Length: 152
Length: 109
Image (tube, rainbow over all chains, first blue to last red; front, side, top):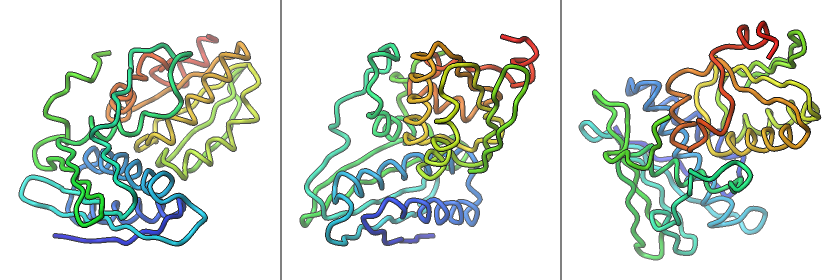
């Protein structure tokens, strides 16, 4: 099953994105945990495109999100035509810092990397193509390597 | 997100139901900001589905402001999957997280 949604550079679009993802999760019997992980990751990626990639308020621009079930995996492909930005090369967040020294932002990309099993980026035909994959079957959609997650 | 405000002893409790995402975070911020003047504030997370980075941002602002005003800011009743988001974000030990609101308010902590 494969579905694509077109979104505009307006942050109010993410509410529709979440509702669409909920419907996809229900139709494909994804667990609440897998659905939650996908929601958190996808909102982050979409808001990045809207607020940083395109910026709001100017010329209307669009980007696409495709959800697909491929065997044991769900894949999410986000394609935009903003300037090249590779979130996989984004600086790592230091999650050991105390609250006073923590930046308020910066959690988002860290969450995406740690909630998805793989995050892939390519620049192709003047577009950013970000592919997130997570296992939906007999698993909880966790990264293969959890060493960056502190045990609390 | 559905947000209900109640008073329980000396605690102001906000009960959250739904998604603490970009939309939910804006709603929470509106409900929370008048309460961030010190005193004891608890958020009941029992019915929260998940927390996105927008949600974490609002919670961190709340915690920082309450700390600055010598107040308390406690999250309670979190399910294991929601707790996992906090741990991944490295915030599981930054926030004070209690088992449930009832124990918290009864203990008079």
